[in-house]
Amino acid sequence: MAKHSLDVFEHCKLRGELAELAFMYRATSEGITVAKPWGDSHHYDCLVQYKSRLLRVQVKSTFRPPQGKYKHTYKVIVARYVQGKSFYYTSDEVDFMVAFLAPCDCWYIIPIQDLPRRRAICLYPNGTRIHAGGFYEQYREAWHLLKGEQPPTDMSSTIAEISAAANRTSAFRHDELLSLVGQELQPTCGLREASRNSIPILSSG
Image 1 (tube, rainbow, N blue to C red):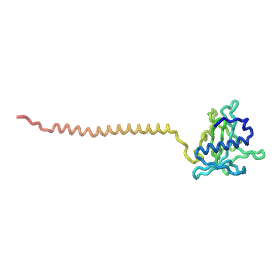
Image 2: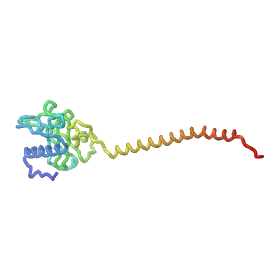
Image 3: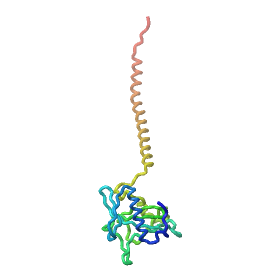
Image 4: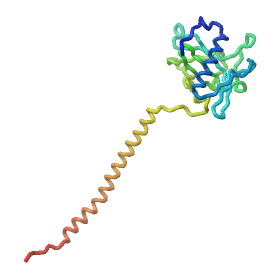
């Protein structure tokens, strides 16, 4: 996605609308159907559907890159404001909070029950040294949560595990085969030796 400028999207409502459009595009590219409710009276921005699974999603965003000493910290407002007062979203209103970090084109798919009652959250897509930071990194690009599926596995590690298991199995079978062959050959060699000793030798003449 192209870089985003605060000069172009100066009005916060316009930035919010752009974030919703970006979410629709990205969710659709993940195979998720997106619908926009009529009007602004709902506490969620979009309805998403994957197969028979239907969820309410609130989209939050920031278009401001990290600044100063907090160069790895993206701050996203997750509360809503009504007449100057902040209110927190609940599971009765929203199922997932989606946070869009426009400067790095990064998405966080956060279950609403895991969102604390606070005005904003800090996200660290580039890592953090803060001991208590990085809690929401487990939800970065977690589109599988909207689908109700398990997270995608790393195929390279899976292949390595399968290969190691195959090697262990081959080694076991090889040792087992040698053991069985040894057990079979031992009585056979004894029979051959006994047969050799029991064969009568005919003398000539």
